[in-house]
Length: 65
Image 1 (cartoon, one colour):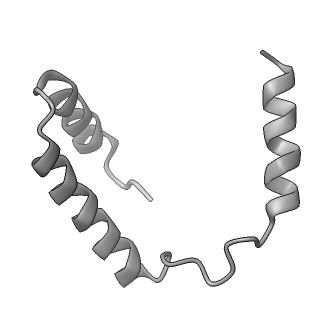
Image 2 (tube, one colour; image 1 turned 90 degrees about the vertical axis):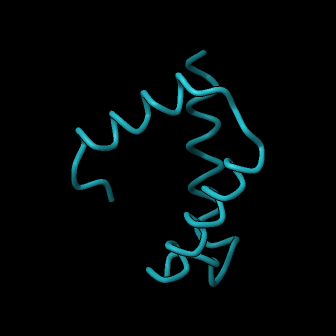
């Protein structure tokens, strides 16, 4: 959960302005993965948990287009 929107928005602006660097992006992804595993969010215990709800939501969102 993002607790400080201002910091995140500033980070987002910087990321949009910067040219994309594959290795830097990979480093950011790896750090996010490590953080998520430390929080216990990843890896998913059961990847198919709530799949029916997700499918129903996807169908509803696609109908509105």
